[in-house]
Image (tube, rainbow, N blue to C red):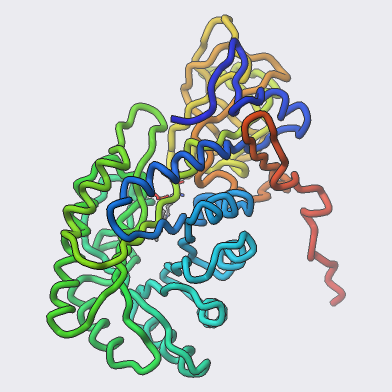
Length: 416
Ligand code: LLP
């Protein structure tokens, strides 16, 4: 359920016609619905109301300050994977003790920054990283709270680029090695073992892999506790899928049942790192038609948004629904919706049935609230687009469209 609906022939975000926002702010642009984000957060968190838990929103899915602030004010923490995301989360007012730091390649300066800030825990992904964190914590004369990210070797049955919990993936450490890491960590004076973590992939549409992964890490928790190593936080990662097309992902309540059953009680605090399920269907990318072009075998609709604005279709061959911002009864034809970027991979949709839209008309790429803007680039020297947040009948620009000056910011001529 989201707040992007037609009223008459016009697509609205909450109580604002999308066309009005596009008129005022220009295109391309991302439009987010605050009420949708809030609703998704609430439904997710309430599914776990019977247990002690913390929802650490996965900042990589949408790291706009307004989004982080909105979620933070509702009680969310953040799952971060870089110093930059830590900076954003703090700027948005998310308390450090609600921040978990994941990622296979944390640099020393990032570890130092996080230790200095006092985050909730580091999700450690290798033996060398464990040594680094211990070393830096010793230099700083403090104790680093850690969890080990376990790779449970469960197939999430999602796109290979976004599956993370298989043996062949670079993420986490295998269960057997995790046991060794925990023993080492328990003996390191500047580490405090507080948790266990796993994250098996993204856009999962079945609960079974989640259940299996959690059972495997809980089995390890049992073995750790038998050795006197106690674990307070069980972080089960993110990954719950959404509807882009005709998927039927589990409801948060079904997901919760699976997780709670696999955890099997106890006094621990559960941590979640959802991203897509909170913001995915809370945003659209709005573009304007530039030209229609008939190729030898295809009809192209050339729009002013491109793969630099939304790379999911190009990178994962991901399907994202496209809707006209103003409904029309013109005949629908099969088209490729493409951008101006000089790559054949620059498409937003291929073989999509869309009513004929003329130059200047608007379309919306749906379900673009997650992994849309954060993956945007300036490729082809295209300034990154604006982002707008809507609530009820109000909207505000929460990130200005970049300018040509922004494109060359920090560059200088070689004085050689
Ligand atoms: N936690 C960790 C450690 C992660 O790596 C991720 C996502 C999440 C949580 C959040 O997963 P979510 O709940 O959003 O599924 N760019 C890709 C998705 C990459 C996901 C990376 N990790 C896409 O556009 O489909």
